[in-house]
Length: 398
Ligand code: KG4
Ligand code: ZN
Image 1 (cartoon, rainbow, N blue to C red):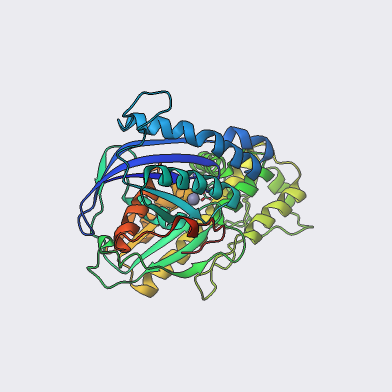
Image 2: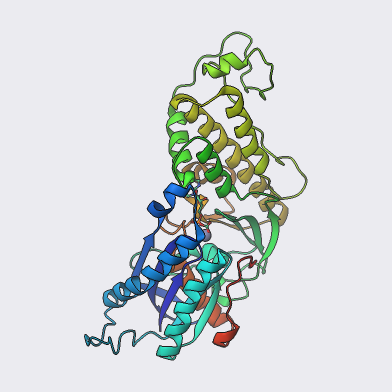
C-alpha cells in the first residue's frame, strides 16, 4: 500500500509518500517521495518560532509540496487543469496530531482530512514523539525494513519541546513489528525546560541565530579541539563556580581559567532532568563578565554543551542499568548533536544496541510519521478513527 504522511507540528512543512509491503512481522518501506520546506529564514528575525507565521507558511506550502510529492511518486495520473486523478493510488494518509503548536497541527490535520475525504482513504493520527522513536529505522532515500529489536528498550527523546526517557518493556525477543513493543511508559522527564529549548535560549544569549542548537554545537566543537591553556599555579583544574566578588573573575574574563556551569539534578535519585538552572547560570555569567567576545562565546558554548550532554548521558546510563535495557534509541532534533552521539557510544555497554536516526531524520520530518502511521494501522488491526474525532492535541503525551 502507499501511505502519504504529513508533519506540521512546528516550523517544518513535510510530506512523504512511502510504499509499504509486508505485515506486522516483515514490514518494508520504499521512499517514493520525501519533501519539506523549512521556515528557518522566516523565524530568524523573531529569534524563535512565531506560531501565526508558521501556520500561514504551512497553509501556503502544503499544496505545493503535495504536488511535488505526487509527481515524484508518479501519481499524477491526469494532467487536466482541474487535476482530476491526482493522488489516485494513495491508500492511506498519516498525519501528526500532537504534541506541538496547535494552530500548526490543525493546518496539517485539516489538509489531511480534506484529502482523506476526497480520495476516500483512511486517516491515521500519529503522535509526533512516537514518530521520533521510530525515526531510527528510516532512511530518507531508497528502502528500509524494521529490524528485530531486543526488549526492554529505552528511548531518550530530546527535542525543542521534550526531554524524556521512555521505557518499552515488552519481554525480550518481542519485535517492534509485532506492535506490542510500541507500548510506552515515561520513566524520566525534564521538570522545566527541554534540552533543545535550553540550547536555543543560550544561543540567543550569545547572540547566535535561531535555531541555536546547531550553532552552539558548532562553536563547542571548535573550542573542544583547541589545545587547553596551561593552568597557572594554584588554579583549579576543574574550574570553579563563579561567585562575585571573586578574585578569579578577571582571570575568567581574560580567558585564563575555565568556566564551570552546574549539572542540575545530575545526582538526584530519579531519572528526571532540569535545564532551566543551567540556562540561568549562563545568563548570570554573562551579566558578570559583560558581553562575551568571540573567544568567550566559544568557551561558554563548550561548557554549556558539556554540562547539558553530561546530564543526558548520565541519566540515560542509569536508566539502562535500572531496567536492564538491551536497546537504546536516541532521537529528536538534539540527537543530531555530535558530542551527544559520541558520549553516548562511550557509556552504553556492548550488550546494548544503540540506535540513532540519520542526521536528516533527527529533526522533524514526515517520513517518521509515515512509519509510525503504518505500524499503528497494523497495531489497531486496520481500524481507523472517524475523521471528526481527530483533533490537534498540543500537549499529547506518549
Ligand atoms: O525535534 P525537533 O526538530 O523539533 C521539535 O520537535 O522540537 O528539535 C528541534 C530542537 C531545537 O531546539 C534545536 O536547537 C535542536 O533540536 N537541535 C540541536 C542540534 N540540532 C538541532 N541541539 C543541539 N545540537 C544540535 N546539533
Ligand atoms: Zn520533533
